[in-house]
Image 1: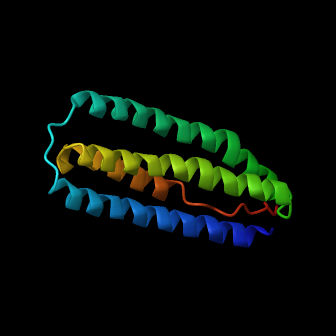
Image 2: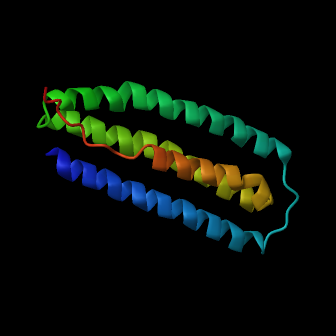
Image 3: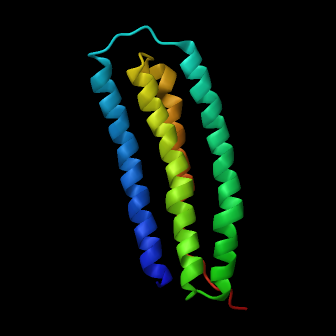
Amino acid sequence: MAMGPAVRLVRQVQIAMLVSIALYVVAGEMLSRTMAPDPANTLFHALSFISISLVGATVVVRRTLVLPSEALLKERSDDRVTVARWRTGYIFFLYALCEVLGVFGLILRMAGFTLANVWGFYLGGFLLLLLYSPRAPRSEVG
């Protein structure tokens, strides 16, 4: 697989996940009107701790999986295994971890927390997805 289609696929997945986080906000607001339970602070603290760990995990995954693949692709852009590793690193690891942050926001909203309490989860997932935009590795011509 050439690098062009892989980058296009990763960008499409990124856009779909950005839209899904926006839909989580809308769904959370619509569902919160029908539910009014007393929220458990333990759940909020647990998901906050897990979210901080997930942000750290995205940094580690990017450094150990995506960046080495990009370095190899600068030398050999037609290596199918490296392209697959690069694509997998973005979609199944980076973007999935970012998406989980948005899901945590939805879970907390449905558990009875206000939007003021959970906006950081939505925004964090959204901004991380934007931050980790795919870049096609270019070979350095000297």
